[in-house]
Image (cartoon, rainbow over all chains, first blue to last red; front, side):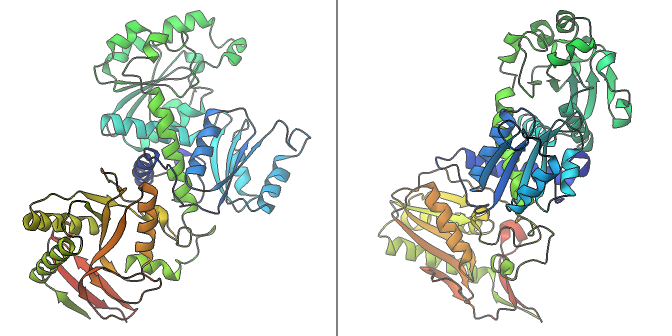
Length: 319
Length: 177
C-alpha cells in the first residue's frame, strides 16, 4: 500500500484485492452489537471537507469512530477558512495539532496531492473537483464483487455526465485495473474527449448497451451545470439517457443497478427503478463504511509515517 | 538448524488428551464452546470438537476469531497486519469459552483474543488450550491445557504445521542464528 490514497491510478490489482478483502472483515464488525474495534485507538483523523458533502463525511466519520480513532470535522463554513485562511495554512495548523490522517474533499482537482507536500499525515482523497473519488470507486467495486462474485470480465456501463464526474473517472480506472469491460454512455457533450485513452468504450445510445450488461451504473445529473447547456433540457435527457422502467426491463436478470447518490428520481433514474431489488444503492452506502475502515486501517496501520523498520515486538505475534 | 519436536501421532494424542481434560475440568460440555484463533487455532479447535464429540457424544460449537484489530503493535510495523475472518455464529455470553491456539509465546495474542471475545459478549469463563507452550511470556497469562512444553530461545522460530493448511502435521523448532 502507498502512504496516501489520491487516485485509483496509484492502486494495482493486488492492492485493490487487499483493500476489498480487508473490508470484508470490517463488514463483519459492522454487523456486531458492539460495532467498534480498538485498532486505531489514540490516532486522530481529520475530516477536512471544504465542499459540501453529507454522506461521504458521515461515512468517513463512522468508519474512523468504529476503529476507535478520534475524529475532528472541519468544514469551510464557520471555520477559519470562511475568514480567508489559505489551504496551506489550514493544513499546517492541522499538522501542528498532530493529525495522523487527513480526509480531504475539495472543489479543486489536485488539492489532495498538494496537501501531501505540506503535511506528514496520511492523506485520503474524498473527492477533488472533477478529478477523482477513489473511496467511492472502491466501495462500488466491493459491491459488484460481493453481488456478482467477480470483477474480471464484468460488463459495466457508466451512464450520464461523465465529463464532470470524479466518480466515473475513479470507477473507470478501477474497473479497467480489475479487468472489467467498461462502456461510458451519455450525450457527446458530456463524454470527455480523452475517454478512449482510459481503456474504455464509448456509446451515445443507452438502448444499444443495456441488454448485455452486468452492471448499469447511473450518474447524477448535476442540475447546477444545466445552465451551461450541455444538453437541451432535463426532460430530454431523462428520455434519452434515464434508466426508465422500460430500459430496466431489458437488463439481464442478475444485472445490478447502481448509483453513487444523491439520486434525482425521475431524471437519471425512474423512482420505481431505484426501488427494484436489482438496485443495490443502499448496500453501496453500507459497504462504504467498511471500505473506509479498511483504507484507514491499511494506511494508518502501517509503519509510523515514513515506514521505519518493523518494531521489535512484531515477532511476538508471528513467532 | 531445525528439529521436529512433535510428529503427527504426537499431535493427535495431545489433542485427544486435551479433549479429555476439557470434558473432565468442565464436568461435561453443556456450556462449553471452542474458539480458535485464526489461522491454525481454528483448525485445531475443529479437531478438538471432533474428539469431544467422540468422547461425550455431544457437539460443542466452534468459532474462529481474528485478533488483528486488537493487536498492540498496529502502526509499529512497516505493513498493516493481514486481517483474517471472524466467524462466531453463537452467543458467547454465559458460556465457558476455550480459546484454542497453536503456540503460546509472549501472551500478547491471548490478551488481544480476550479483549476481542469480551466485545462479542460476556463469557462465564475463558480457558486457554495450546498445542505448544514455548515460554517467554511478556504478560501474566498461562494456559489451562497444554499439548507440549517446548523450551526455546527467543531467537528460535516455532512452526506448527497442520494437515489442513500445510499438508502434514508436525511441530518444528527452527534455530535462527
